[in-house]
Image (cartoon, rainbow, N blue to C red):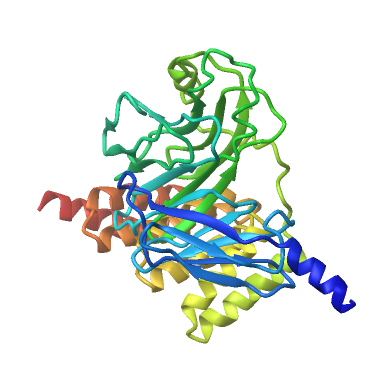
Length: 385
């Protein structure tokens, strides 16, 4: 490339400014967060947020290029990863959660529409802007003037109950066929422990005012839905009807990604890292394998072991539940029994004996074994005392 051409390329890349707020305290600006723009084949660029929570980075590439990621980090918070474009956007950092069955869902979007609402529906509960508290659930932040965040925290998910999460375009609630929500740049981030376990982007080129994002079944497993549909001005009845079935069936609009050779290779690298004692590195590798192949059950099982080794038990529960959901073939009952047992051991170690009992019973139901039956009896004895 000639020097003149290189100057033109560099000039085409404009500085990118983003705002970083707290996901749980309204309008709290986060100072000192590390903001990085990353693109394969190009040098990453990093800046730090000011006292006003703003960071400006100057990459040699455009944030509108394919594959550009924004990464935001700060100690005490979960690392946020989002796809760009991200110029002028606001992102929210989630403080690390310590509840075993806790979950945090964070919504961010662009300038328009001004008011998007995050909803959580589960038996006897509907948490949103006019009902900010539910059973072990809270709407931490409500935003009505663009960008977000809106945040719902589930302090402890109830076992056996289905949950549904959705976003409603309140600004255009009376115009059910508007495409404003599809054009909003809305993103939903799902956190467990200190991990961002799932992120969603609103479906593009669709009409409708209700984005049904994902559900959680009674076992605690997440299911992608990611559909955008017309809805009534008050979507409560529709949301409750959608959440009445159990188990929830995956109906994602994008096709399921098969397990690729690249994912298999990355998973093997994670296993080597784990056995070499590089447990934190193994987590990153397993997560990368899952990003390449979202239904890679073995990677989830391995991830659960690594999280357990790091005492990140909330994430370990999630990974084991995902492994249960993906178990298939002749040995599926063995995989499920082992994962239920691993979940039960975490609950027992935390002194949650009733929860542990349920999981030991599920393990024994899948594959009757003396170790599972003995554990079940042990929990019954502890509960009596």
